[in-house]
Image (cartoon, rainbow, N blue to C red):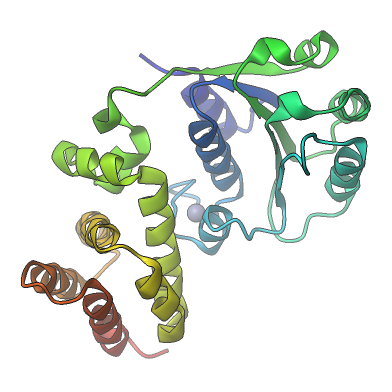
Length: 280
Ligand SMILES: [Zn+2]
């Protein structure tokens, strides 16, 4: 069954996404993840595979440091009118580097009455090339004047079947057993770790890997490497990566099985990958 959010992504691919969405139901993490996927798809630099996950724009969005993607959350107990006015100013300003600005108001049921009114003005006169979304558990909690201007997007509750999470399956390269493992380890977390690691590799910056390697639990390092191997298999099949890199990742996974410290295994892997990378 096609989920409502998949329809939003399809519309976005054709340049036809509604400019104002209310994401409700499911879990807050799933909604935020979905919003970031939409923002990535709209801003992706890769025309043949929009939302590729590898380009600079996709990686910045995944790491929450894209200058045109905003997430508003309650400051304290509520989301105040100043926060919405501040967002409005940012959205009407010229874009920094993206094709689209995207703003998510998380826990949107925490908006004060004044904040709701300020947002209503934004929803009535949306800035061009801007995707605005509210995220909350219960869509009915949004005031009717806002709701009537939005496309409601319902997220089904996925608790209970972690193995079929779309993100886990994507990270696992379609391998259902690995997807199940990644789900148990937290697909969102694994995805973020993978993005940070790939960004450090792309920058050729070993020093950025040190805090990452120190921060990760042993199991997280293993899942990161398995997800990296899955991605490399797909990239090699598409002629976008060299098989040597996958050999190095498999070697690091073997090191883990022989009880090499995960931190050391990741650091050594990084040095080997960077040493093997073509010099620019
Ligand atoms: Zn991309």
